[in-house]
Length: 460
Image (tube, rainbow, N blue to C red):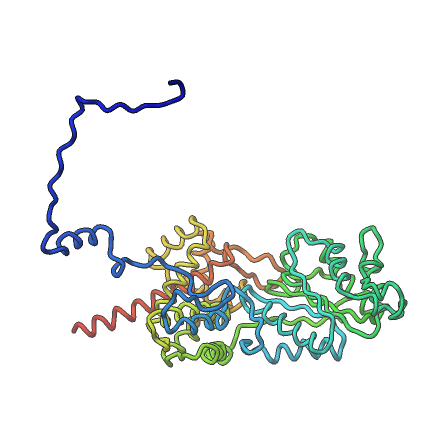
């Protein structure tokens, strides 16, 4: 019958014999235990690391750690990789901020802020921006890049300035009612400093701060020249727009093009190292925010090792506090700081070129560790470039020792002559991050030596 399928039993196929049922073992654990050793039991199986907070910054329900809430607060207390944006966490710099505000408000000057990397310039700008916004300034913040152009920067700034504040428009005019900005009044071609200053000179009823952060990153000399020209034109026309420039530089001439007529129109502020009291305030802010404490010995170590660097102080506190909370301790000890120094040294080493690492290691093996530490100390104190006299005075060494140290590091390529216009010859490290790495490595060696001494004394 087509389309039908039949299954016919094979009469010669032997059926398998029935298996006898094996009784269960008297000790069931004898069977289970080997399996748990191979597979891991639900109780003993190690947990895979996970996040302790959700993307909305709420404590994760998976975590049963009673310190998880403190961990969450800690993320906002010590922020080495981010500038301070919360006024409650801003430490020190009150005198500097007051001087800048006075220069903007009372003298109508343009501001130039400079200093070494990680010294707190961007945090200072955030506090300035908040203070200006509270005073109803229009604040425009731009982070410069290598390819920044004057035309792009000023057009971007103009989009944040409503045409409502232009003296040529009434509040009831169509352009004002539909929300036009100064960008709608700019010509189609490239914007010149004079043209933008002319437009800004017609503003009324408000004041504007244009903040250009990381100004040093811009590689265009034309951009720097145009910005310098703009400050002159704005001052000449008594415009209600002021510029704030900030960037990494050891001195003012490294940051802004040298145009003599604008010197009287600007206020230059170098951001120095933090004082010990300001570093202590960083720690106190973190203690207040998180609800834990630093032992006095731990605090002393942070101040000594950070050497006035807010970045380094925040990084050490960040690592040490996380270690303490992970151990369910609401107190940061000196041992936590020592461990934080070890972790920081590993982080910094990864930022240094391999060939430079080898040269540094070779000099250490040749008993030149103190030469490296002395040069690093001078570099960090002088914002990068230092002279023989600086090296001598900062480290309290004689002229012959300072000269020998510089010659040694120059011959090895770790130091190079600084390209500046100082009368006294100055030197800088071949890589920007090298001084801090050498300094933290020296601190690590000193702490290890102290640990070894204590261990030997305890053994005896």
